[in-house]
Figure 1 (cartoon, rainbow, N blue to C red):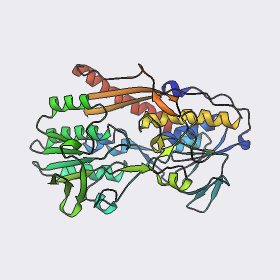
Figure 2: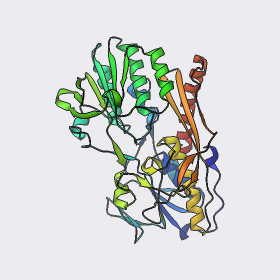
Figure 3: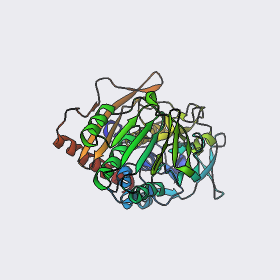
Figure 4: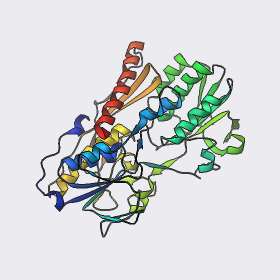
Length: 407
């Protein structure tokens, strides 16, 4: 989409002469695999799940505005194009031998490897929060069963109950995602459980689209949604699942429903492959998305340290196209062109109320930086008709991108 969507040049090599393995079948991995296949490369996509569950719009599922089956996408279209899709989990990478080990015992050789592993949740980083605790206090930050669990807990809560959300410090997947979720949970409470309240405990003092969100909250959810920033004691220091209680340095908050979003890092295969640094994320070259730690391995999507470019599905889709073009150039012995990339992020505040932010990025000084004067954000004083139009744009973008990636 956008500037990053330029067509790949016709290859000068045969399919059999260059092998590319792509690990991860989300917005980044599936997009990259299809683009490389169309460029004439021998591509294998490795993905353990038969169905991909998309995170964009999953907050609407949490708020009972959307059904879960609208988030599910398969890989038949990729297979029908002749692309090899291996349903297995990548468990190891040998950068010297250029091989990927699979849990089923097979090993895949590659000339270039693209990792699109998404995120892993750092269970244990927040005292008291582990995988068992997540069944009581759902994170719902990987779309799927957790999304349904949080939705069902909200539905079962008695009117008058308090919902407590916790938001981690940066970086994490989808910077405005927690605040969209807070908005849509508030909409659900206002509509179905009007005596209830939502408390958002945040480890930060600022966040993406903050003025737009807060203006909407004041208009739509006064007295219902309370945001507590870091400076006011919002950082959560522990959770007590048995008591459904969240702890900060300034108090203890017992919830009827608790949604705990823990700290995150790149998906596990990134560390196994040696492309994640001490931060848990993956430093990359901003022109090719090649790892700065391991040659011939590229990292795209949420796992990458992409400078000013946020971790989002739109960003992963754009990075995948740039990475595919760069891989094709490198395998021909050509120097990749410096890209420009676009990211647009829509957030729903209510079913008919959307806001957005867009950015354009370019490589500079070894990282991706904002292109000054490009991009933009929804006007603070926009009409409700404008907000409704942006909500419609969010739905249209989702339909368009999922059709392009999986359809």
